[in-house]
Image (cartoon, rainbow, N blue to C red; front, side, top):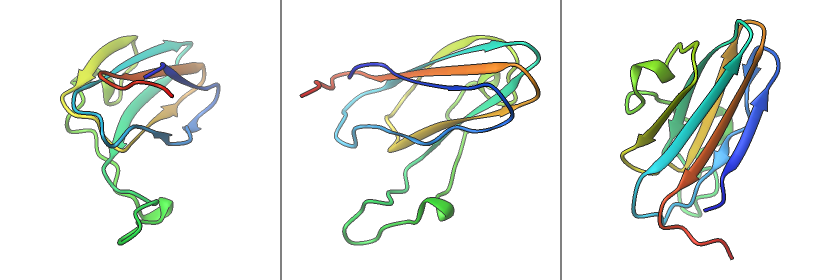
Length: 111
């Protein structure tokens, strides 16, 4: 899968990044931080596009338990791999500065 990049330049939450639900391996995450920004990476397995049981975006459960400690309330650059590919991933910024997250999935081919 091509790398997907999202950036924040003020405190807030990035739009969720949709990942390939059929990926059979890990996804890699890289976060770069500048200024005094803090951040938390979170993912969800809820699917607002499910045909049988959709979960509205506002009701999605976001978790960080599979992320390493530096990706939760982090303040420094970090790269890591999640052991599975969630359906969505996002980043939350606290404080001033900027945060950029790049995500890619293994074994996914772009059309």
